[in-house]
Length: 177
Length: 334
Image (cartoon, rainbow over all chains, first blue to last red; front, top):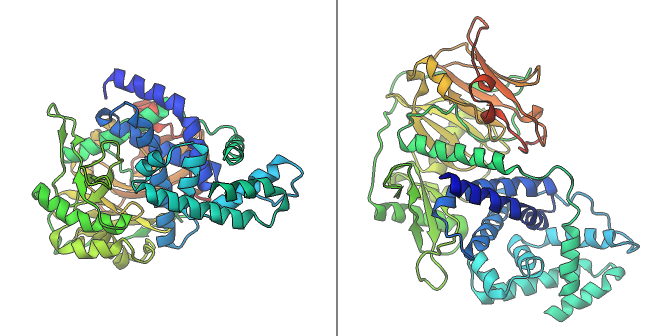
């Protein structure tokens, strides 16, 4: 890679790695694993960098690679019958006395949702992407994104229903259907 | 939606310290990967002391439980690069990629840089990795931003087996040599039954293995990634070629062959003054090295060196190329 290309790569990596790691964390519930996935994706990005269009499509490429890596990991986990994707690191069901318990409960619920549904939630609600953008990343139809998202929200609602303190979010999820 | 968005943001805001990746380290690793691809493209002319990933092994300092295989000397196959047409590559890879990713897609092979002035080419050699992209759902050609998916181009007779292997049972342990040969053959779609299995070492639920053909080629099999890497056997290189090489354990275990093809050479990985992993060569320089139990989650710089049978240092990674031995933020089991 030419040096000016490397400089552009370094600049891009510096600006996006934190966000990518957060996305990977929401997909895996494990910071160390999220960091490893981010590292691997950014190395792949280096290899692909010379042939990539650096326009607006670049974030789409990177997000898709993150999602593919996590979903592939889950698929391999299934094949190997091993629990590669860890449970979230600290996930007590709290009493609602602070925001930490809410967040932990949400992360626990999120990790129980199937990977592609989880990806829809993360892309639509965390990355705040449109249905069309989400479909582009997941290489599926917009209708598929809608149905996967609805299933994910339904699952989250069921998983969070027992915790009374999570009521506003449950209501929100119901409203979002 | 805002509440959920805020909750997701809050949940992902509390990053533990020390997770930041050094862009310079990423560049170095990326260069290494490009270098390795080019080395393979050029027939393995550059020395790479393996780089076969593995996690969760049983072999580490003081606990040498690696499996050594008797080197068969008769009836070995010879390796020759076989090129097929691009259409045949796509035809052979399509069922495998469809099995891996579900559904039926139109797969389009992606040109990759090959390190020459011409710049790009598509892979057509059997047993080598080809990069593919799926066409968009609307069927209007490959998406230009789609990530490439690798397919190890299978031999014609192995397409069905490689397709079935996508959903096969867990990979075998390294000690089960017959199963390792079978799994490497089917998962990569390349018949290795008449290659000599020199080393195999456990990965996290799979294995990495090293094979040698009769005519001076080696194949590294990574069952975790279901791929093969072919290169000229470094045993045929002079020992001095070590000076041009580097150790690149970007994961926790590797198999390879030291230049010179000498047995009884000792490879040491050092953390400061402490030796954290060792390997001894056999079968004309073959080795298996595993760093799993000794590897810090977010590591420090390590050094590597090679000693001859008399204990004299014949190569030191730190002296030869310091940057290549800085391995940070590598996750290993345990």
